[in-house]
Length: 207
Image 1 (cartoon, one colour):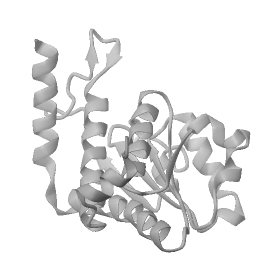
Image 2: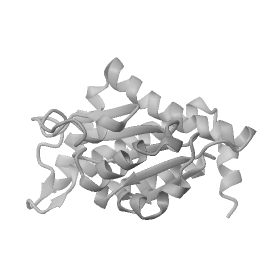
Image 3: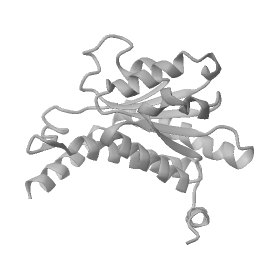
């Protein structure tokens, strides 16, 4: 099937990108996530929050769920909910990962802008996972990068990565595939950084 062939080409293309800067970005986000796992084991300090909307939000939910399996206290909140009471779940020593393919999704941008206006949340570290599609096309403050301490931008929309991103022009495909691949790369680094072994995993999965 053409869809499967296109998916395989997309994964092959993203795997080739690598490079020191890209690898450093993956490790930086993973290290922040791993830190919360180590802190939780010691004194329960800080949690990791993940946010997003739409299909990118579903990828964010999977990231949070998988990090919990790795003993990293992590929670998903829809980007639209931060301005409706969920700011109360954030603490100064927490971290927040936001997943947005375009980087300009209004719910995500508004959520981060609101968080940055809260003096009590000055210590929150925000990491952004987004494509390079609109990175240089919008004014400052209208892209999630403006509010991030750590960024993991991925190339998309050129002749190699995600050139055909929809099924019949209607349903996003390769953008989700790339985000899921990056989530797996982050999880792999967390496992390595925290020396997480099979027996540790089984403690979190007794059933």
